[in-house]
Image: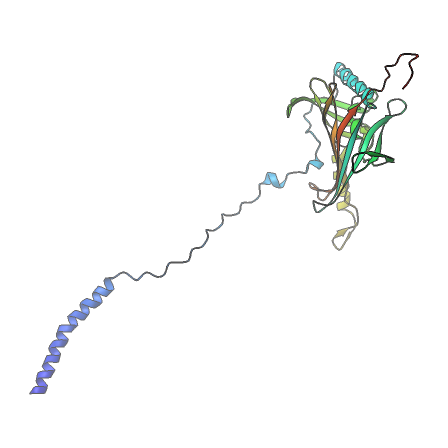
Length: 325
Protein backbone atom coordinates (compact mmCIF):
# COMPACT_ATOMS: atom_id res chain seq x y z
CA UNK A 1 0.00 0.00 0.00
CA UNK A 2 2.84 2.36 0.82
CA UNK A 3 4.48 1.69 -2.58
CA UNK A 4 1.28 2.48 -4.42
CA UNK A 5 0.92 5.77 -2.49
CA UNK A 6 4.42 6.89 -3.52
CA UNK A 7 3.79 6.10 -7.17
CA UNK A 8 0.58 8.13 -7.06
CA UNK A 9 2.45 11.11 -5.65
CA UNK A 10 5.09 10.95 -8.41
CA UNK A 11 2.40 10.96 -11.07
CA UNK A 12 0.77 13.99 -9.52
CA UNK A 13 4.10 15.83 -9.38
CA UNK A 14 4.81 14.95 -13.06
CA UNK A 15 1.41 16.32 -14.05
CA UNK A 16 2.14 19.55 -12.20
CA UNK A 17 5.71 20.04 -13.59
CA UNK A 18 4.94 19.39 -17.25
CA UNK A 19 2.91 22.64 -17.70
CA UNK A 20 5.68 24.59 -15.92
CA UNK A 21 8.35 23.18 -18.26
CA UNK A 22 6.19 24.05 -21.28
CA UNK A 23 5.74 27.64 -20.06
CA UNK A 24 9.50 27.98 -19.42
CA UNK A 25 10.37 26.73 -22.89
CA UNK A 26 7.85 29.17 -24.44
CA UNK A 27 9.36 32.09 -22.49
CA UNK A 28 12.87 31.16 -23.56
CA UNK A 29 11.76 31.00 -27.18
CA UNK A 30 10.23 34.48 -26.90
CA UNK A 31 13.49 36.06 -25.65
CA UNK A 32 15.66 37.90 -28.28
CA UNK A 33 18.87 36.17 -29.27
CA UNK A 34 21.91 37.22 -27.26
CA UNK A 35 24.07 39.98 -28.83
CA UNK A 36 27.53 38.94 -29.91
CA UNK A 37 30.77 40.95 -29.33
CA UNK A 38 31.10 44.29 -31.17
CA UNK A 39 32.86 43.95 -34.53
CA UNK A 40 36.34 45.51 -34.70
CA UNK A 41 36.59 49.05 -36.15
CA UNK A 42 37.95 49.15 -39.70
CA UNK A 43 38.86 52.20 -41.79
CA UNK A 44 36.33 53.22 -44.41
CA UNK A 45 36.85 51.89 -47.88
CA UNK A 46 38.87 54.24 -50.10
CA UNK A 47 36.90 56.12 -52.74
CA UNK A 48 36.86 54.49 -56.15
CA UNK A 49 39.73 55.55 -58.37
CA UNK A 50 38.80 57.76 -61.25
CA UNK A 51 40.36 57.38 -64.64
CA UNK A 52 42.78 60.20 -65.59
CA UNK A 53 41.30 63.05 -67.54
CA UNK A 54 41.87 62.57 -71.24
CA UNK A 55 42.93 66.18 -71.52
CA UNK A 56 45.67 65.68 -68.89
CA UNK A 57 46.79 62.43 -70.48
CA UNK A 58 47.20 64.13 -73.84
CA UNK A 59 48.97 67.21 -72.46
CA UNK A 60 51.97 67.97 -74.62
CA UNK A 61 55.33 69.08 -73.27
CA UNK A 62 55.93 72.79 -74.01
CA UNK A 63 59.14 71.86 -75.83
CA UNK A 64 57.01 70.36 -78.59
CA UNK A 65 54.99 73.53 -79.03
CA UNK A 66 55.77 77.04 -80.16
CA UNK A 67 56.24 79.61 -77.39
CA UNK A 68 52.97 81.30 -78.37
CA UNK A 69 50.07 79.59 -80.13
CA UNK A 70 49.63 80.93 -83.63
CA UNK A 71 46.73 83.37 -83.67
CA UNK A 72 46.88 83.86 -87.42
CA UNK A 73 47.94 87.49 -87.18
CA UNK A 74 50.18 88.76 -90.00
CA UNK A 75 53.91 89.09 -89.53
CA UNK A 76 55.46 92.51 -89.62
CA UNK A 77 55.42 95.65 -87.48
CA UNK A 78 54.81 99.26 -88.57
CA UNK A 79 57.91 101.12 -89.76
CA UNK A 80 57.40 103.80 -87.09
CA UNK A 81 57.55 101.18 -84.33
CA UNK A 82 60.51 99.52 -86.02
CA UNK A 83 62.44 102.80 -85.93
CA UNK A 84 61.65 103.38 -82.27
CA UNK A 85 62.88 99.91 -81.33
CA UNK A 86 66.03 100.40 -83.41
CA UNK A 87 66.75 103.71 -81.65
CA UNK A 88 66.61 101.94 -78.29
CA UNK A 89 69.14 99.38 -79.58
CA UNK A 90 71.46 102.24 -80.61
CA UNK A 91 71.39 103.57 -77.05
CA UNK A 92 72.31 100.16 -75.71
CA UNK A 93 75.34 100.08 -78.00
CA UNK A 94 76.64 103.22 -76.30
CA UNK A 95 76.24 101.60 -72.85
CA UNK A 96 77.82 98.27 -73.81
CA UNK A 97 81.32 99.32 -72.69
CA UNK A 98 80.23 101.56 -69.83
CA UNK A 99 79.68 99.05 -67.05
CA UNK A 100 81.15 96.15 -65.14
CA UNK A 101 79.34 93.68 -62.90
CA UNK A 102 79.67 90.36 -61.10
CA UNK A 103 78.56 87.16 -62.78
CA UNK A 104 77.72 83.98 -60.86
CA UNK A 105 77.31 80.77 -62.87
CA UNK A 106 75.44 77.81 -61.43
CA UNK A 107 75.44 74.61 -63.50
CA UNK A 108 73.64 71.34 -62.83
CA UNK A 109 73.49 67.92 -64.47
CA UNK A 110 70.22 66.02 -64.36
CA UNK A 111 69.46 62.31 -64.04
CA UNK A 112 65.88 61.01 -64.09
CA UNK A 113 64.64 64.57 -63.84
CA UNK A 114 66.64 65.42 -60.69
CA UNK A 115 69.78 67.54 -60.33
CA UNK A 116 72.67 65.25 -59.37
CA UNK A 117 75.76 67.41 -59.77
CA UNK A 118 76.05 71.16 -59.31
CA UNK A 119 78.90 73.65 -59.61
CA UNK A 120 79.12 77.38 -58.88
CA UNK A 121 81.65 79.84 -60.30
CA UNK A 122 82.00 83.63 -60.01
CA UNK A 123 83.58 86.10 -62.36
CA UNK A 124 84.18 89.75 -62.90
CA UNK A 125 82.26 90.58 -66.07
CA UNK A 126 82.38 93.31 -68.71
CA UNK A 127 81.89 93.75 -72.45
CA UNK A 128 84.40 94.73 -75.08
CA UNK A 129 83.50 96.31 -78.39
CA UNK A 130 85.50 95.58 -81.50
CA UNK A 131 85.09 97.05 -84.95
CA UNK A 132 81.58 98.16 -85.76
CA UNK A 133 78.82 96.74 -83.57
CA UNK A 134 80.57 93.57 -82.42
CA UNK A 135 80.43 93.16 -78.65
CA UNK A 136 82.37 90.42 -76.87
CA UNK A 137 82.22 89.13 -73.31
CA UNK A 138 85.26 89.38 -71.04
CA UNK A 139 85.47 87.41 -67.79
CA UNK A 140 88.04 87.40 -65.01
CA UNK A 141 88.36 84.91 -62.18
CA UNK A 142 87.09 86.19 -58.85
CA UNK A 143 88.78 85.51 -55.54
CA UNK A 144 86.96 84.55 -52.38
CA UNK A 145 87.14 88.13 -51.09
CA UNK A 146 85.38 89.47 -54.20
CA UNK A 147 88.43 90.90 -55.94
CA UNK A 148 89.26 89.82 -59.48
CA UNK A 149 92.47 88.36 -60.85
CA UNK A 150 94.21 89.20 -64.10
CA UNK A 151 93.30 85.79 -65.54
CA UNK A 152 90.81 85.91 -68.40
CA UNK A 153 88.35 83.02 -68.61
CA UNK A 154 86.46 81.56 -71.55
CA UNK A 155 83.19 80.25 -70.09
CA UNK A 156 80.50 80.93 -72.67
CA UNK A 157 77.24 79.05 -73.21
CA UNK A 158 75.87 77.64 -76.45
CA UNK A 159 73.43 80.54 -76.16
CA UNK A 160 73.80 84.21 -77.03
CA UNK A 161 75.20 86.47 -74.30
CA UNK A 162 72.50 88.09 -72.20
CA UNK A 163 73.39 91.59 -73.41
CA UNK A 164 73.25 90.49 -77.07
CA UNK A 165 69.46 90.37 -76.84
CA UNK A 166 69.17 94.15 -76.43
CA UNK A 167 70.10 94.31 -80.14
CA UNK A 168 67.16 92.14 -81.21
CA UNK A 169 65.57 95.09 -83.05
CA UNK A 170 68.81 96.76 -84.17
CA UNK A 171 68.79 97.94 -87.76
CA UNK A 172 71.59 95.54 -88.66
CA UNK A 173 69.50 92.59 -87.37
CA UNK A 174 66.06 93.52 -88.67
CA UNK A 175 66.61 91.98 -92.15
CA UNK A 176 67.27 88.61 -90.45
CA UNK A 177 64.10 88.51 -88.35
CA UNK A 178 60.37 88.36 -88.80
CA UNK A 179 58.46 90.21 -86.06
CA UNK A 180 54.86 90.61 -85.06
CA UNK A 181 53.19 92.20 -82.05
CA UNK A 182 50.93 90.03 -79.90
CA UNK A 183 49.27 92.56 -77.63
CA UNK A 184 50.09 93.94 -74.19
CA UNK A 185 49.61 92.98 -70.53
CA UNK A 186 50.89 93.58 -67.03
CA UNK A 187 53.89 91.45 -66.07
CA UNK A 188 54.18 91.97 -62.34
CA UNK A 189 54.36 95.75 -61.98
CA UNK A 190 55.49 96.25 -65.59
CA UNK A 191 53.14 97.16 -68.40
CA UNK A 192 54.66 95.32 -71.34
CA UNK A 193 54.10 94.89 -75.04
CA UNK A 194 54.60 91.41 -76.47
CA UNK A 195 56.53 90.75 -79.66
CA UNK A 196 57.15 87.43 -81.34
CA UNK A 197 60.26 86.92 -83.46
CA UNK A 198 61.67 84.30 -85.82
CA UNK A 199 65.32 84.18 -86.83
CA UNK A 200 66.32 83.46 -90.42
CA UNK A 201 69.76 81.94 -89.77
CA UNK A 202 69.85 78.11 -89.41
CA UNK A 203 70.67 76.85 -85.95
CA UNK A 204 74.30 75.74 -85.55
CA UNK A 205 76.27 76.70 -82.44
CA UNK A 206 73.49 78.78 -80.85
CA UNK A 207 75.69 81.82 -80.18
CA UNK A 208 73.94 84.12 -82.67
CA UNK A 209 70.54 85.58 -81.75
CA UNK A 210 69.51 85.20 -85.39
CA UNK A 211 69.47 81.41 -84.89
CA UNK A 212 66.60 81.64 -82.39
CA UNK A 213 62.83 82.07 -82.33
CA UNK A 214 60.97 83.41 -79.34
CA UNK A 215 59.01 86.02 -77.48
CA UNK A 216 60.20 89.32 -76.04
CA UNK A 217 58.37 91.45 -73.49
CA UNK A 218 59.34 95.12 -73.73
CA UNK A 219 58.42 97.96 -71.41
CA UNK A 220 55.40 99.61 -72.99
CA UNK A 221 56.78 103.10 -72.29
CA UNK A 222 60.54 102.84 -72.87
CA UNK A 223 60.50 99.83 -75.27
CA UNK A 224 63.41 98.30 -73.35
CA UNK A 225 63.43 94.50 -72.85
CA UNK A 226 61.92 93.02 -69.69
CA UNK A 227 62.07 89.31 -70.54
CA UNK A 228 63.21 87.13 -73.44
CA UNK A 229 62.20 83.49 -74.00
CA UNK A 230 63.82 81.73 -76.92
CA UNK A 231 64.34 78.36 -78.57
CA UNK A 232 66.34 77.30 -81.65
CA UNK A 233 64.60 78.16 -84.88
CA UNK A 234 61.96 75.59 -85.88
CA UNK A 235 62.81 73.44 -82.88
CA UNK A 236 59.33 71.94 -82.42
CA UNK A 237 59.33 70.60 -85.97
CA UNK A 238 62.90 69.34 -85.63
CA UNK A 239 62.18 67.45 -82.41
CA UNK A 240 59.19 65.65 -83.89
CA UNK A 241 61.12 64.71 -87.02
CA UNK A 242 64.19 63.47 -85.12
CA UNK A 243 62.13 61.51 -82.60
CA UNK A 244 60.26 59.73 -85.40
CA UNK A 245 63.62 58.89 -86.94
CA UNK A 246 64.88 57.56 -83.59
CA UNK A 247 61.74 55.43 -83.16
CA UNK A 248 62.50 53.77 -86.49
CA UNK A 249 66.17 53.16 -85.73
CA UNK A 250 67.56 49.61 -85.38
CA UNK A 251 66.27 47.82 -82.29
CA UNK A 252 68.55 45.41 -80.40
CA UNK A 253 66.79 43.52 -77.58
CA UNK A 254 64.51 46.43 -76.83
CA UNK A 255 67.16 49.17 -77.14
CA UNK A 256 67.30 51.67 -79.99
CA UNK A 257 70.72 52.21 -81.52
CA UNK A 258 69.94 55.80 -82.47
CA UNK A 259 70.33 58.78 -80.13
CA UNK A 260 67.27 60.54 -78.78
CA UNK A 261 66.98 64.11 -80.06
CA UNK A 262 68.10 66.96 -77.83
CA UNK A 263 66.59 70.41 -77.55
CA UNK A 264 67.42 73.71 -75.89
CA UNK A 265 65.70 76.74 -74.42
CA UNK A 266 66.78 80.06 -72.96
CA UNK A 267 65.34 82.82 -70.81
CA UNK A 268 66.77 86.24 -69.94
CA UNK A 269 65.41 88.67 -67.35
CA UNK A 270 66.17 92.40 -67.35
CA UNK A 271 65.45 93.77 -63.85
CA UNK A 272 68.29 96.26 -63.30
CA UNK A 273 67.40 99.80 -64.41
CA UNK A 274 69.44 102.90 -65.13
CA UNK A 275 68.87 105.93 -67.33
CA UNK A 276 65.54 104.52 -68.56
CA UNK A 277 67.28 101.33 -69.72
CA UNK A 278 67.02 97.79 -68.39
CA UNK A 279 70.03 95.51 -67.94
CA UNK A 280 70.30 91.70 -67.65
CA UNK A 281 69.97 90.21 -64.17
CA UNK A 282 69.47 86.51 -64.94
CA UNK A 283 69.95 84.14 -67.86
CA UNK A 284 68.91 80.48 -67.82
CA UNK A 285 69.93 77.99 -70.49
CA UNK A 286 68.45 74.47 -70.42
CA UNK A 287 69.25 71.32 -72.38
CA UNK A 288 66.75 68.48 -72.56
CA UNK A 289 66.16 65.15 -74.29
CA UNK A 290 62.98 64.00 -76.04
CA UNK A 291 61.79 60.74 -74.43
CA UNK A 292 58.46 60.36 -76.22
CA UNK A 293 56.47 62.13 -78.93
CA UNK A 294 55.04 64.43 -76.23
CA UNK A 295 57.53 64.37 -73.35
CA UNK A 296 61.04 65.62 -72.61
CA UNK A 297 63.37 65.42 -69.61
CA UNK A 298 66.10 67.93 -68.64
CA UNK A 299 69.72 66.87 -69.00
CA UNK A 300 71.57 70.04 -67.97
CA UNK A 301 70.88 73.62 -66.96
CA UNK A 302 72.88 76.71 -66.17
CA UNK A 303 71.77 79.92 -64.49
CA UNK A 304 73.82 83.11 -64.75
CA UNK A 305 73.07 85.98 -62.41
CA UNK A 306 74.37 89.52 -62.94
CA UNK A 307 74.63 91.85 -59.96
CA UNK A 308 76.69 94.74 -58.63
CA UNK A 309 76.48 96.87 -61.75
CA UNK A 310 79.02 99.72 -61.81
CA UNK A 311 78.63 102.32 -64.52
CA UNK A 312 81.25 104.78 -65.66
CA UNK A 313 81.80 107.35 -68.38
CA UNK A 314 83.99 106.45 -71.32
CA UNK A 315 84.45 109.98 -72.61
CA UNK A 316 86.74 112.67 -71.27
CA UNK A 317 85.86 116.02 -69.78
CA UNK A 318 89.37 117.45 -70.14
CA UNK A 319 90.09 120.46 -72.30
CA UNK A 320 92.92 120.64 -74.81
CA UNK A 321 96.16 121.45 -73.03
CA UNK A 322 95.09 119.97 -69.68
CA UNK A 323 97.61 117.71 -68.02
CA UNK A 324 96.41 114.16 -67.59
CA UNK A 325 96.77 113.14 -63.96
